[in-house]
Length: 190
Image 1: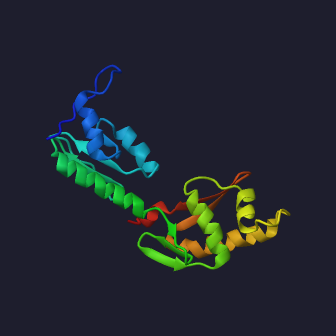
Image 2: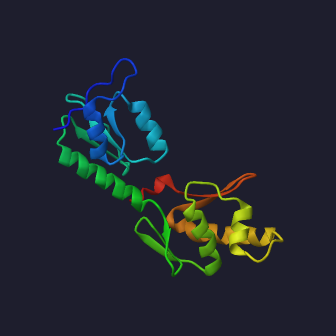
Image 3: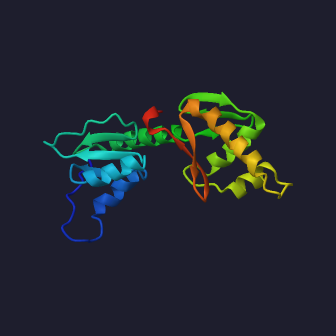
């Protein structure tokens, strides 16, 4: 059984048992509920998978978020490990992927893309969650042409945007910087 101690009143190194617990969670944050509710909320907004450790006698949270689970303390290490593996697997399904045949896969669904749409989507997926500049996109789509092709890139982005939207994926324009691919948080994709 793993028992997570209450946080120390002053900053100090983590207790020896905490290091083992981090290995058991495989990097998934294990947070004490309700003491760390503010951290839980921050991770929810960032769509980070998290496991809540509910103290005996405390009311567990009600959540429909597939990136969140909870266990009551004390918890068996095997159960902790399985729940964290499940959270990691759910998180992996929330990342879009595109194969060599230009089929975009996300949240258990798939969509074939035209070559031009696939090249834009592929670069945005490679940098999923980060901004990709117009210059980088244009250089990837037209490597031999350095003229910029501003309107052509705008048309490709527009077509790709429309094509990926039914999967719950959106291409957001980040002014003066480029484009960002993200998932609709209301989609509930697992």
